[in-house]
Each structure stands twice: as structure tokens, then as C-alpha cells.
Image 1 (cartoon, rainbow, N blue to C red):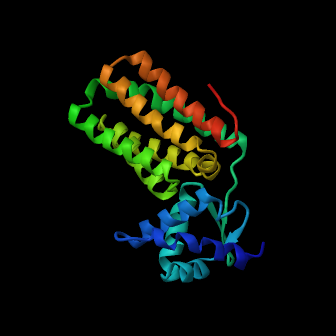
Image 2 (cartoon, rainbow, N blue to C red):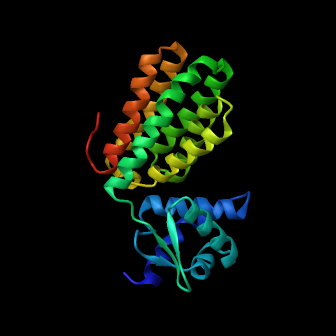
Length: 229
């Protein structure tokens, strides 16, 4: 596939750019293109051509790509554009290990401080995650999933921790979701958010620990087409 053909394939995500910060919306659209496989690892993409497809100037596209580069999703290639970085199984395993170290104990701590009001808000978001998965809407799925986990961890009031967990989740959730939609397994993964909320309501630390650990390992396995318990 040529560079022009690769860039033309991104056109389906133009509708992802909605109201709000243009830079953030372009980033959102580019992430969605990576999730769907339209932005392919190892391929080069130029900011001016992508800008034309999105109906914006090259500047917000370049800024969005630089943001993605900071998070390790793409790399800048001098005078040529940006290349999507391909993560190996070892890379994904390392990120999963970090997530287990961060998210398991902190989610258990959340049970001690979370309010009924916060649980209700999270339940609404969990419904949105399941609904988006059921209709195969990856953009809304990613938005809802991110809001769920950011709000969950933010209950501890540690902004640096929340940002770090969010970054780790963003790095890994960009893999395998298109295959999960086609197989229908994304809905099963989405429903695990409600199971976690049930455990948080009960306050049973061991159940919370098992559920969040299982969710992370399960998701890691689905990226490569296997179940990991």
C-alpha cells in the first residue's frame, strides 16, 4: 500500500472531529484510526495530507502527532512525517505488568473512599461502555472506557497517579479492539466494568483484587487472540 493510499484510508475518521479543542479532537481521531488499523505500524504519514483529510490545517495534526509521540505511539521522522510505532509482545507484557502493579492495589483502596454518588456516575458510564461495544463504536467505547477508569482512580485524589494510569491504559487499549468488535468479545470485556462496580459496592477487597487483575490479564490475552487468567 502506498503512502497516499494509507492516508486516504483515514478519511472514515473525519467525523470524529467534533466540538471542543481542535488539537484534542484530532488526537482522538488519530487514536481511533490506530485502533481500527487504518494507521498502520511502520507506515509514514504526513501532517499536511492528514490535515486535508480532516479539513484542518497541518498545524493541529502536527501538534496532535507530537502529543502521541510523547506517549510513545508514533515517532517523528525528519522531513518526512510520523511513523506509527509497533509494540512487540514484550512491550505489551511490560505495560501490563506495570498496570497490575498500579491498578490492583489502588482500585482496592478506592473501595474505602468512593461515594454512592460516584458509584452511580460510574454505573452510567459502564452502561455507555457496553452500549458502545455492542454497536461496534470504537470511538465512543474508548471515550467511555477512559472516563470510567480516570474517574475511578481519581477518587484517591492523586493527580500524578491518575495521569500515569491513564497513560498506561492508553498505550495498551490501541491494540486489538477492531478484532474484538468483529468477534463480539468486546462486549464481554465491556461488561466486566459492571462486575467491578458490584465488587466495589460490596467492599470485598479480595474480590476487587481478583476482578481488576483478571480484567487486565484478560484484556492482554485478547490483544493476541488468547485468554489469560
